[in-house]
Image (cartoon, rainbow over all chains, first blue to last red; front, side, top):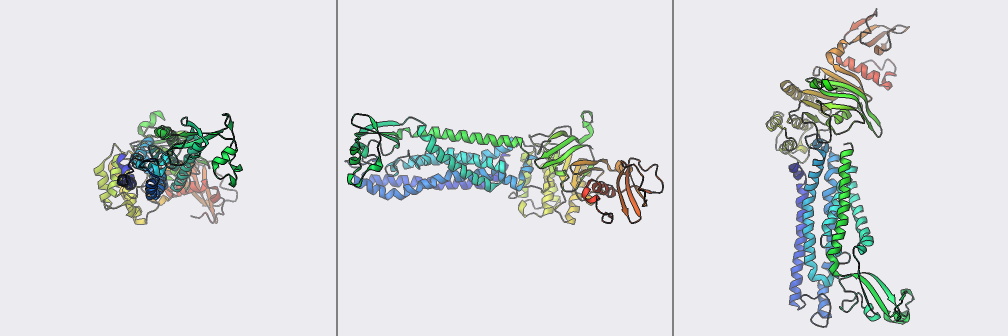
Length: 323
Length: 301
C-alpha cells in the first residue's frame, strides 16, 4: 500500500518539496545579505534606534533596503501552508471517489483504515517536514531583520515563523482530506479548505491568541506612553512586542477614560490632548518577544487538536459510511 | 446457512439494502453453489451492483445477511478468496499496466504475479502502456488480470461487457471462460443483456425491482417451467393464477409461461420447454408493471 500511495502522490510531494526548497533558499539568501549589509554599515545586531552606532539615519537606510522584502515575504509564507495542505489533502480521497478507484483499492485484501492512513501519511509527512523546516528557517533568517519587520509577535510575523507554520499545514491537510472523504468532490474540498483555514486562522488570532499567557504590564508617563510604536528604544512597549491593551490614569492614580475623539487640532500633539483630559500616566499591556515560543506552542496545540478531531471524523465516516 | 457453507460460494438471507432514496434490494434470499457460473440478470437499477457491493464489503446490509464462502464481509478488505471486477473497471489512470500489476501485488498477500502477467500478455496489452491509453477491451483485460491474480475461488464481474464492442465482448468472455475451465472457480456475472450469457452459465439469479424472482440451476429452472401455446379463449386460460408467470395474447393465440407442474391438468395446449431467454424475459416482463400493462401487440417479442 505504501508503494501505491507513493506512486500516486510522488509528483505532488516532489513539487511541494521543490517549492519549499525555493522559498527556503530565498530566506537563507536574504539572511546572509542582511547580515553582510549590517556588518558593512556598522549596525550589526541593532534591533532598535539608539544614540550610538544604531543611529536613526543608518537604521532608516537599513529599513528602506529590506522594506519590500519584509512586506512581500509574509504574504508568501502565509499562503504556503494552506496551499500545500490543500493540494496534499483535498484531492487525496476526493479524486479516488471521483474516478472510482477507491472501489479497486478497497476490494483487495487491504482494510479501509490501512488504505486511509497510508495515503494520509505519504501525502502529509513530507509536506509537514518541509514546512517545519521552512518555519524554523524563517525564524532564523528574519532575526537580523527584526527592526524592519517590527519583531515576530504581531501578524503576519507570528503566523509565518516558528512551529505554527507546520500546525497550519496539518490543519489544511486534515480539512481537505476529510472534506474530500465526506463530499467526494475535489473542488468542493479545496474551497472548504481555504474557507476553514481563513476562518480558524483569523478567529484564533483575534479571540484565542491574546489569552494564551498573561501579558506584561508597564506604566509610564504620558511622554513615555506617547513613544509607543516608535523605534527609539525609550518606549513603554518594546518595538518587537505585541501590544494588547492600554489603560489611563490621572495624577491621583485613578483609572480614567481617554476619549481620542475629543482631541482638537489646536492640541497640537497627542500629549497636550492627554494632559487636557487630566491623564498623567499610561499603562500598556503587551506580549514581549520572550513569549514567542510559549505562544507558538499553545497555538500549535490548538491546531493540532482541531486537525486530530477532523481526521478522526474522517476515519469514523470511512468505517461507517457506504462506499 | 451454517451447515451449507461447505459447498456454497455465495449465500444471501433476507438481504436488504436501503439507500436514502429507498430500498435497492429487499428480501433477497438465494444460494450460489460452488463451481457454478451464474448469470445475475435484471434490468438497470434492479440491485445487481448493490448485491455485489454488499458481497465485497463495500456496503453493509440494512437487514439480513450475506456470506461469501462462509465469511461475512467487513471493512478489513474483501475476502481473499473473492475477486471483484467493478462495472467501470476502475484502475489508476496514470499508472502503467506493469505498475498496476505491481499495485495488485502490493495490495494482496495472496497474489500470483506470473499468472497476472501472463493474462496481460495473452491479451496483447503492452505492459509499459499507461492505463489511460488503453482501449475499453484492453482495460477490461487488465482489470480481469488483476482480479484473477488474486487466485479467487469466487469471481464477481459487474457488467463486464457493458462498454465493449462485439468483438471485445467475445474475447473477454472467452478469456473468462478459459480461466474458469482451468481453475473450476465459481463465477457470478451480472448483465442486463441475457444474450451474452446464454450457453455460458449454468445458474441463474434473476433480480428485478430489488427482489429475487428466480434463483437456481438453469437445468432445473427450465425443467420446472413450460410454455403453453394454444388458441385464445374467451373465458380466459383457466389455469391457477399462482402457476402462471405470464400470459400473452397475440391475435387469436395465447402463450403462457407456467411453473411447478401447473400445466399437468391442462388440455388443448402445446407444451414446450422454454429457452433460458424466454424464461428470463417472461419473469422480467411480469416483474415490470409498466411493461406488462401495455397492449398485447407491443409484448410480441
